[in-house]
Length: 126
Image (tube, rainbow, N blue to C red; front, side):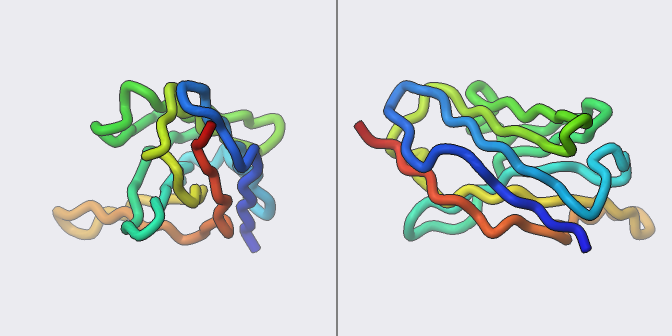
């Protein structure tokens, strides 16, 4: 069974860098069929897709966060990491990592998150 687990500090000061790590077990991060994704949910709001990255380097970032976001992959540790710079209190959220697959059905491409971490609360405050 594939499992994902987020780790990192729960409190970050404004203007600093948020850094979270997702450890993957039960599956290889080098499987290029999958992408490795970060999603967040601010309090009282819906889910927001931050971005994803394949181990081979394919990357997508949300346009609203692209200038501040970086996702990296460490194949030796079977981990991937989110870095979000210049954070503000509006970045306070529960952060999730997830495995993503794309699937071509006829002329359509579907994106599916099949495994999620349990989420970790990150608060941006001085």
